[in-house]
Image 1 (cartoon, rainbow, N blue to C red):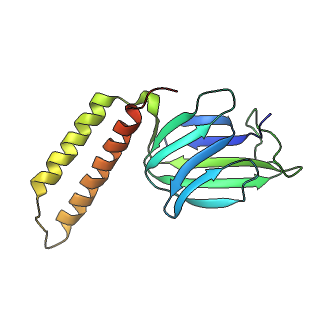
Image 2: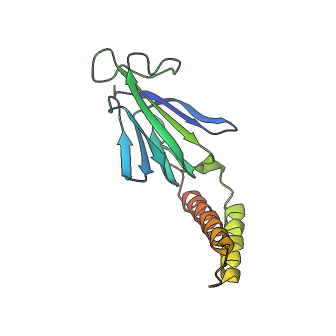
Length: 165
């Protein structure tokens, strides 16, 4: 049996996943990260990215995460409350990954038509701003918000276009 560990993916609205995993793959502002059983304790940010939750005997879960924080806890009782998590490679220790995201969604739940409309709306608004620059920086703030909206829509479209595993 592969070493499994506890994973929770939580948004303000819901818990998207709470269960065992064999690996979690994500991206932080300092680079890509793969967490496996026995990983060193870690706290960091999560940039907008696809998060993969690999599970033994089940398809990999693909999530669109639009930013947040990740904590890796490796302690004797870290996986408490999550069924199916094994003791890690160091006797007596378990691993728990907690991903807190403001917005996250399962790739299977993404509506491609809605994501395409959001992408088109964001791009049209960016085009409308053109190269204008605001004296009080409001145009730059608006442009950044629209670029973020465009990136969220493109991430959703990228995940929605993948065949199901």
